[in-house]
Image 1: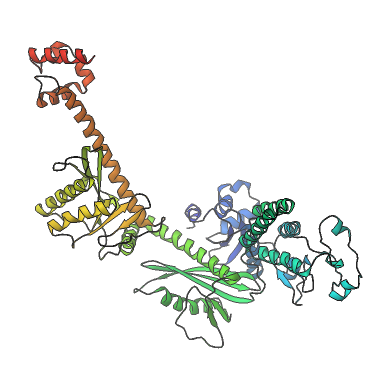
Image 2: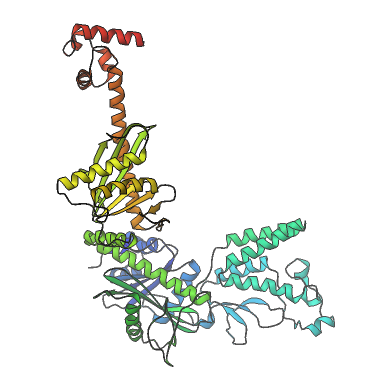
Length: 599
């Protein structure tokens, strides 16, 4: 039975396109959204607000698929292409491609830029189609404000301009054109503006930003502050323009795009089919690994199967890496490094990564052991271990200016805290603030005891500190003869570097990696546990040391007093009769005399 609440948990708060399928796996509706989860949820969370036809649609939904994109523009374009391709029953039928607007840069001298509904193969450059006329006009108006170009349809050949056939018009007078018709603007300057416009339409906004910043800096150095201010206004306006389109390059005529994401037991393959610059098919499929197949092997198996299933005859296949498949005249593989095709590959990679994450989260909710196994496997790989780190121990030292030094050890089993196994140590052999010696003593005492009691050693030991603390801990392991039986690393707080014995350079893990998160959790837990114990020890010893200053009262008596009265304050407030239960008359007199002098 369809569980919409469960479906909603896997849908992200991102722009994209959603697709509804019925029980026969027929696509019945395609929609776009700025926020996929909120939009899809609105169909189910407020059914009383829906009209009759929409309520019928909702009752027929048996599966939801979605594709995330970069911007709302991309969502419009993808929705448009999917509806025209599949013509879902509950969608209003869209018009033909030719009725949707394009932005065109005309193939002529001093090219014009304008919008059109006619796609003519005359060498001009087309961007679109735009599913939203309003959005297309926003883009076009912004471009015209930033970079003035001519709007007339005059034949601005070099001969006509030299003969003085044309006069500047009102557009020149109000600053919307720089007058190339009278030779007031050189072709080189005009083409520089045109290059910026092409970059914006191709999504290369950062390139234009950097170019404008360089020009502004140059204007400031030449004391041309008016020009610098004009360029600053352009930068501000460009900064407000966030949209870049990934799926609008009309130069990509018929291409298949494949990407893959995998883990130990599963692999996920995303497929995008692009025709005339727009996506007409999108699908992510799951593969169950049988052996330890590589991504290259899995993708090589998936491509012919998916192309057969969707009857694709595209000659160009975009993939994320080289494949060991013999090409022929019917198809060839391409691994793009930049440009529009790279953007399409990045979009496919983004979708397959999200699909993998959500599907694994579903599996792990049903079977928590899978998550534990995956995390431990990733830790084994990241930390270059030969075994799974099912048992991890982490050490931390605490002291204040060398006083009351203590060490704490926390234990994680299967990547989770095992608090019953936490231990702390009062340092016995170290005098003064010597953090290295304190670490050496704690590690030695811990594993001497495990060996004496024939208890299992951990697979991984983590030392909270850099090379010095790691070296001290390793010294103890060598004395015990177990340095080859465990993996030991140190973690430095400042940059989260991981140090290995004998390695000159530290290891840096991805800041978002689960391996680093587990290590940080261990380190923070050891610090918390150590600090708590240290505070308790410091408080108790502070109290004891003060009461032990009283003549005739020893350590054992002090402990009895604190156990009975709980604090020094309450001990001082006790009556002589109450104190007489623990002290003799001479001790009571000394007690009163001591605190009389203190006051």
